Image (cartoon, rainbow, N blue to C red; front, side):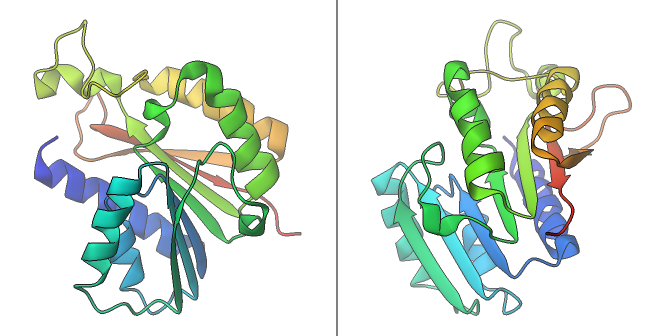
Length: 200
């Protein structure tokens, strides 16, 4: 992915987090921390937790955190799975999955739905994932995906169907956005869903 598209994606997610008013944020599948280090520098956050299943990625993230000024109130980095989250992470203001769901086997998506919408049940949930319709503009052949570890890549219609069903079952309302570039018919390189639920 070209760097400017990646930066556009990060900025779109940061804007959605800020718009939500969240002070306690989960970064699920935080990886090396491209989003996490930006969040850690935000004094508006009281509590920030990053989770990833790859220990080596978390080591790199910790090294990055050591080189910046951390302004968030509490910062925690944990080794773990987003499909089987710790119960103490329930009820955060916002949970973010930045380009992560496409790395999950499709037969595990029901476990992810339960973890996100039933166990964690953050007030706002933000999910981004590649938009398969944009792939030709990136030179990706029709029979391939952008990354060898991707288990699937959805077009916008398929993503919206999955999100709408999951949201309805859990009492959330989704809003959809084309992000990371824009094309009049193909959308953005990525697509974002922001799920909100009534307070209480």
